[in-house]
Image: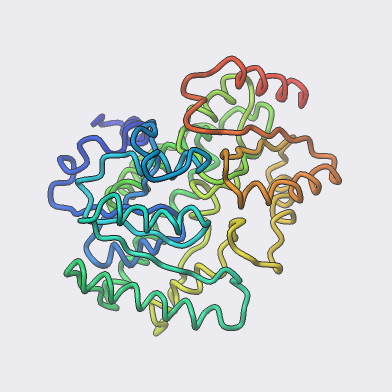
Amino acid sequence: MSADPLMTLRAIAADPYTGWADRYPDRRAIGVFCTYAPVEVLHAAGLVPVRLVPAGAGVAGADRHLQTYTCAIARGVLAGSWEWLAGVVFPHTCDTMQALADVWRAARPGDYVGTLVGPVAVESPAAEVYLVAELRRFIADLEARLGATVSEDALRASSRAYDDNRQRLMALRASLPYSDWLSAALAGQTMPVEEHTRLLESLTPGPSPSPGVRVVLVGAVLDDPALPRLIEELGGAVVDDDLCTGRRGIETPVSLDTGLDPVVALARRELRRPPCPARYAPGQPRPDRLLRLVRESQAQGVIFLQQKFCEPHAFDLPPLRAALGAAGVPDLVLEMEGREASEAGGALRTRLQAFLEMLR
């Protein structure tokens, strides 16, 4: 790896899985599929949570298990080569992810498959009690099936390590072009948190990026820095996002109070973090959040990255666009499947260029 921390982070984000076991010979990796996975619990168990994304793997072989109208994220991940993992953990978010846990057991019968079914109605009076019990059940399952131990002290230490990491990553948003910031965020989701934090500490913030045409990105998973890099090349600047691989997954700390049970603290973090469309939180309307992000970042427009066949985000799209329209904020919807931006396809480039020109 390069001695330059930013180059190292870019390289890991571009190819996160090749040679993982050789890079970290004393560590055990466990795959996760969502920011609702309790990474602090996995870290406290002596494991390294590694977020699994297609990463250009294609979908060869997935047709044996999933229909062609299933999202490319699920199909691409199922088609990957994950023999180096100690297992996988599926939080229940969308129906595809819930079903993928059972498909994974059938396709890879020797793998450890952990599940965590969090509350959908996160503002329900019973949500915290239920989620604490579900986290404890998950911890017991992890300990029994992987021979791990999750102590309260280890869980507190892991929560502090992730809080520190998230805080440092959020602090870098204003001092890096978004494509580089996303590379840093993506790299951190596939490597030991301590090493990622050391790389973030070594980064030397540069001058504030040129503002360009200011846009906000909205969607589920963006695992390819090539898309914001293309926006930057065309004279735009991503000034904020509402992505689970971006702000939405990292902006909320665990906030351990003295004497607070760390499992309760983790449950409270999940319940108060900005909800994705797979969660029901009427007290935190997603249109209101998006308008606030646009206002605070002084964005001129919004680009929706709509993963093909992703039903929760498809249902979310009309009210978000209606709110933007009422506020006079232009938007562009890009239906994504795979890593189109890496190939800088003509149609994608043309649509982005036209939208940015419209906003000037």
